[in-house]
Amino acid sequence: MSISLILEMALSATPDRVAISSPAATLTVRQFADRVDAVAQAIVEAGAGTVAYLGVNGPSFPIAIFASARAGVPVSPLNYRLGQAQLNAALDRLDRPLIIVDEALRDMVVARSSPLLATADLLTRPAKPDQDAPGWPEESAPAVLLFTSGTTSTPKTVVLRHSHLMSYVVQTVEFGSAEESDAALISVPPYHIAGVGTVLTSLYAGRRMVYLEDFSAEGWLRAARENAVTTAMLVPTMLARIVEALAGRPADLPRLRSIAYGGARMPAPVLLKALRAFPTTGFANAYGLTETSSTIAVLGPEDHREAAASDDPEVSRRLASAGRLVPGVEAEIRDPDGNPLPPGEVGELWVRGPQVSGEYLGQGSVLVDGWFPTRDRAWLDPAGFLYIEGRADDTIIRGGENIAPAEIEAVLVEHANVRDVAVVGMPDDTWGQRLIAVVVPADGAEISEEELRSWVKTRLRSSKTPDQVHVWTELPYTPTGKLLRRDIVLALASAD
Image 1: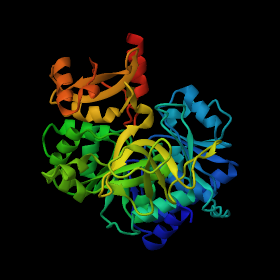
Image 2 (image 1 turned 30 degrees about the vertical axis):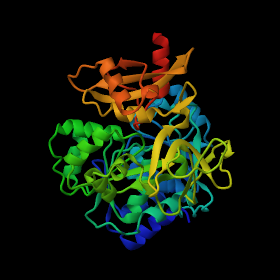
Image 3 (image 1 turned 60 degrees about the horizontal axis):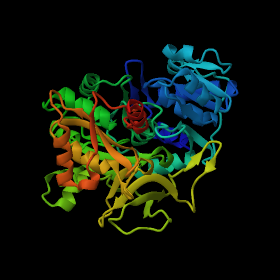
C-alpha cells in the first residue's frame, strides 16, 4: 500500500468533511484531493525526481506530501532555518528537485536551475481537465526523504518508503475514528518526522488539521481556543514555553483531550506543571526516530495518571519512561558485543518491525537481520516500560565508568533554582573526562555550585557529581528541541 491510499479512503468515506483549516485556506477532503491532483500534474510536467519543500507550517505541506506520492516521487521537507551553504548542500543530494518554496524564502533558492513552485499556488492551482492525474506508486518506492538533525555529525538523509509509513499509520490509528468536530493543532515543523506523521494520521483518522505557522506560547494557546482543538503534538521546549506563559494558571482548554509530546528529553518539573495546567487533558509521551517512521513506544494518558498518583517507586518512575512498544515493533537491549540484556540492564536499543527503515540515501540500509541500532542507551523494566538514557555518543567515560548525562540532568533539574541543565564530559588528564554541568537558573534564582554538587552527591554518588558547574542564560537547542551538546563542548573548550 502507498500513502496515496489514505487520501482515497478519506475521499470515499467523508468527502465533504473539512480536512484542513488555517488563515490561508479551508479545504474539504474533496477540495484537498483536487489540489493534490493539480499539483501532481505540475510535478510530472516539471520532470522532477524529488519534491523539495521549503516552507513553514501551513496547508500547502500536506498537499505537497500527497501530490508527490500521486506523482510517484518522494518529498523532502527541508529545514527553512538552514544557512545558504547548508541548504544548497541538502538540495545537491536530491534527484532533479522541484522546489516548493514560501515567497519569503524564495531568495534562498532562486539562483538554482531547479524549477520553482510557490507554496501559495498549491492552494489554488486548478487541475487541467484534459490531463489525467498520474498513477499510483509502488509500496516499496521512497515516499519521504528526511534529513536528520545532525546534532553530533553531518546530517544523513533518511529514506522512508510507502510501506514503512503505511505500517506506522495502520498500526497506531483506527481509520475514521475521529469525530467531525475533532481537530489537531500542528505546530511541529514540516521537516520533523512528527510533522509528516501528523498529516498522515490526521487524514486517516478523519481529524481536521489546524496549522500554526510560527510557534509562540501565546499563539498556540489562542489557536487552540479559537479552533476548538482536541489534540496536539509538541516538542518539550514548546510545552515548557506554554507552561511558563500560563504562570501557574490553568490552560482553560476543555475541548483539548490529548497532548502528545516527544522528540527530546522532557524535564520532570515541566511535565508535572503541564499536568496541573491541563487537568482534563490526557498526556502521551511518543518516542521514536526519523528512521522508525515516527513513534515506536508510547506512555499513554492512563500511564501518566497512574504514575503521577502512585507512591510505589516502581510505578511513579514510569513518568520518566517512553512507555511501551506500539504493535508490530520489537525491541532488544544489547551489550557492546551484541548480546541481549535482561530487564534492568542498560545497553543499546535495537528495534525492528515493518515501520522501521534504517536506510540512508546514498549509503543503503544499516539493518542487521531486520534490526536497527538506534544508538540510544536504554533499558526495559519487567513490565515492558522503556527508559531512554540518551545517545550512546553522549556517554561520558570517567575513570573507566560509563556515565549517562541524562541521569545527572534528571537530578539537577529537580532543584528549585534550576530551570534547565546539560551535563557534558570534558578531557581530563587524571580521569579521562571530567563532568561539567551547565545550568540555566530559574527566574530570579541564585546558583550555588557547592549546593548543586551536594544535591547530586546525596542523590547519586561521588563519581556522578559534577566537577564544575557553569551558569548560562540559555542552552543551545535545535528548532525541534534537541540539545546541541556539541555546541556546549565547543564553547567550554574555547573558554579554557
